[in-house]
Every structure is written in C-alpha cells, then in structure tokens.
Length: 238
Image (cartoon, rainbow, N blue to C red; front, side, top):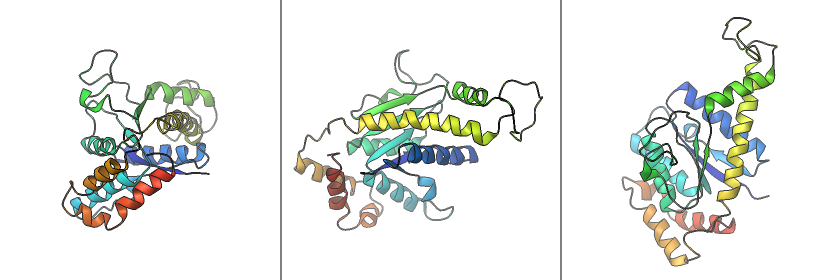
C-alpha cells in the first residue's frame, strides 16, 4: 500500500492547538488505515533555537510532503499557515483547507470562503468546513450519560454532559478525520497543473529550494529536489 505524507499546518501556540492538532492527525492516520501519515510541525520544532532554522525546517517539510492539510480557522488566518499554503501552491501540492470555526469572516460574498480572497481559487485545493461547536455538542450527546468529564457542572446540564471525554472526543475527531480523508482522496486524484512538463517541474522545485534564502538551500542539500520529485512522481502526484 502506498502511504502519502500530509503536512499538517496550523496554529501551534497553546495547549488547545497542540492537543487538537495531535488528536486530528492521529485520527487521520488511523482512519485511513495507513494511507495517510500526517507530519506535525510541532513534533519537529524545539522550544529553543534560531527562528530561521524553524522556518527552514517547516518549509522543507512542505516541499517534501505529498499533500497538505491547512487549518484555516480564526477571524484572520494564521500568517505562518498562509505562507506554508502559498509554498504548497507554488509547487502544485494537493491541499485540503480545513475550517471548523463557526464565525463568518473574510472579504468574500456570502457564497464565498470565510477568509481573505487571496487565499482562495487555487487548483488542486479542496475545502472541508463545518461548525465545530455543533459537532462538539453532537459528539457529547451521542455518548449519553455515564462517566465524568472532570470539569464539574450540574448533573442535569444536558444529555451526554457526563460522558467520558475520551469517548466523545474520539467520536468528534473520527468524524473530522473521515471528512478530511474524503477530501484528501479526492484532491490527490486531480491532474497536476504541471501537465507532465519535466523541465518546468525541475525548474520550479529548484527555485523553491533557492528563493527562501537564509540557509534554506543548504538545509535541503544536494539531491533533495531530485529525490522529492522522484518520490512524488512514483506516487502519481506529478
């Protein structure tokens, strides 16, 4: 079986981000039966070290991964995630945009995406959007009574309010993962914008290894571009 690596981009600045990223990435790995393997930047980065090294490490992983999963939550998208998304689109990497934020935002019309229009309309991109609050409450209700969430509250606060957190969180993240997997399956079958043009593929990937500067090309090292292209070609992505 072919395993596709997925760069998992998004906020990673507090315990909610870190735990949520890990739970969803793990669910995608499990629910796909190993078809997808998420790469979490938070598992690569160190609490100390030069900022440029962290940037370079993350951009190299964007280049190397087969697909991208970009968390587009918030009233204003995380700027680092946007940079990583643009790097992926420069390389025509199949991408899924995930938004669980129920707030309306952005500068598009009612039927448009809930983020800045400059991040929309790119090829080989699919959107998974849902109301996180609604899915959370549904996951808790589905569990019924029994157990303790550990956060207190009145006994009659509602159906499922005493369901064990591990149970309803599994239901929530499994549901999210299934939606993400369906989108990943679809987007990776879309034809590449390169159209099989080997010269253009080589030129674009070579430039991607050069233009960030600040030691990025040295981190990639000799043979990285060629190996990355060959691996993606083998998987039918180019």
